[in-house]
Image 1 (cartoon, rainbow, N blue to C red):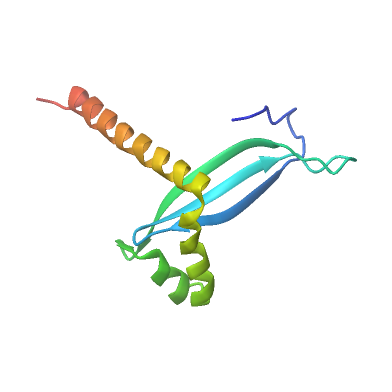
Image 2: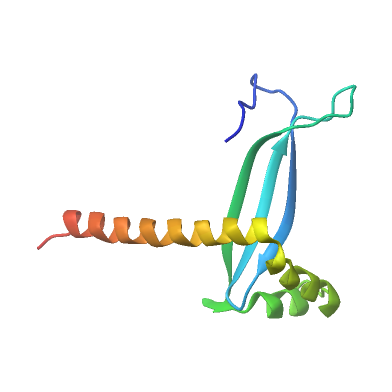
Length: 118
């Protein structure tokens, strides 16, 4: 969260790109912005980093397989996405996201144990 997106019904844009992937996950990066002003400025209002697993017929499949088989993406495009791992800033975001995910899983397990019948 950077700034309020308001007032209600104010126009804003969402920019999304597939930021990275590995053998199990895709990471999509979303930025929320107001349209550019008369000075051609547009600041980020909010950012989202989404980690997603691709599921087909109840099983997690490799994102690369999904992109090739179902979206018919050229392998060179997929390679470019995979090479985005080299972006230091994005790598830091992914690492922090992974740390947060581990903490949330541990917290959820602890909370589930509290509310489960013994």
